[in-house]
Length: 327
Image (cartoon, rainbow, N blue to C red; front, side, top):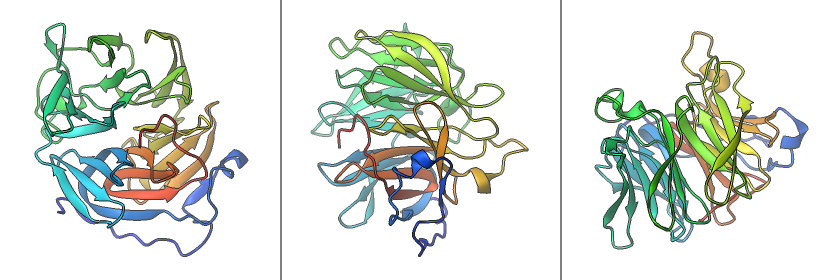
């Protein structure tokens, strides 16, 4: 199964796990004192886009350069290939009917996997021009599908096929009733991870090419999917590499984190998950031996955080639950 290196990892024997750093006392109520960071499996090349399927007790995760989607089974702990080739799949989500939604770099499209396994293309062009390389995806409670479309997957051979961009960096919405594709944002530099607040009144988008540091931007969302009141709520304030994000039931943001690759970035200090309160304050950090690209909540009580991190999938139980979960 391994296409990438397996990263050695030892679960800490101590409680609380010293890998869990409290930056603000507000984080203490989110931490389970007797829960440890666990490595569920390793051997991927670049892990991304985890999504939980509670009805089957399994998690899907993309290995983008490996051109495959892997399935981790909670009951057995076994890992198998769910889809290969995956067209360099990145972000994964479920629609309101529980079907898999997939961002595909190589084919530059959004697809839905039907119950019988057929693949339906939801979007591959806007106004006749090809999408760049859909990156991350979420589904709103009204059935609207939102996704980011930076050019990362067409920049080289590692995560797709090199190609010129035909469209600007953008965020899109697929209307729930008509399936019409709407380009809702074109001014976010490097739109990456995205998530809704628990009541879906706010949309968060990671601006992964913002200068001088990566940021999370927020927008008010109206009933028709209109976005207003743009503002930034989180600034990395240094070389921290914001990536995929998840929001818990209390409105806290759990952000994939690591070094942005600059000369001042220290991966050993930065790699992991940074947790922010709704007001943008950093309140906690989960230290991992690898950069974390994306996260999701899942498990039987939706209180387990899964962390797709470079070569490995990690998990930890929390004292909160994911918002807007379908698992």
